Image (cartoon, rainbow, N blue to C red; front, side, top):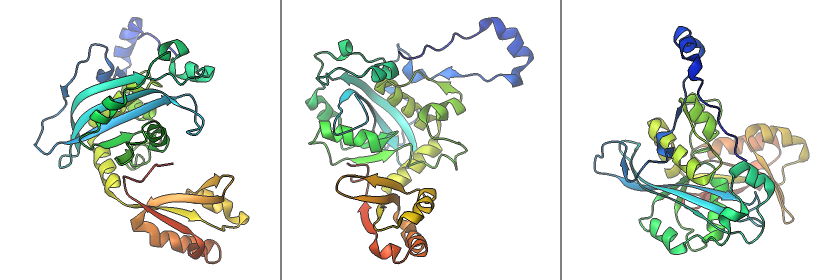
Length: 298
């Protein structure tokens, strides 16, 4: 089951006061308090607020083909495109769904979600569609995972703009050495009990609110066009160079290739890299241009 956090060592308060440089204080994210109510105004509105959904799913496994959603959580919020910040949280929802098969034990260990919790439960399709009727930007911390599962389950809700807070924000430039949600918040002095869709989505909302630069970065990336490059015909002996460059291996029964998704603005540079790596590399490569409505699909 989910690991319990240790109690705060009140008996060591005098020690902390005497040696404050040797300790670091972590505070629970306020949005995750049980008594929190919605709506919640986070900052002053300047009148240009737009809708945003922060979304997370828990599933029975990693394969979108073979596995299913068991929990869907969404935070309905507003953001200011001019101020580059989260302005308010309008509502929060979490729903369970019975996958029709036993939940693997490792999923229960990770999330705490049991067969008993989801038994007979069903996500309300009409409610989900109503939550998205103002065409919000949908943000997930691993959109490459969440979007395919969401669109498999709700196959009429596939035309929305998606952004990924893990890959769509330059966390290194912002001073972080990783991009895991828990790590990012710990570095800012916050903690939460993760691996539940509702808690993770609230934690991501708090991260974006606490670090306005991340919102600015995310909105910029969401509005850019990207290019999915498939390095068709790349010889075996260049695989290490491709991996170092950020390419990933696609291995299916139909085709196999190295691929990478980049900002359209640096495509010319990437073509030069491929040509220098192997003969006619850019000529034989395949290019798939995408915007926020097309990224992270299956």
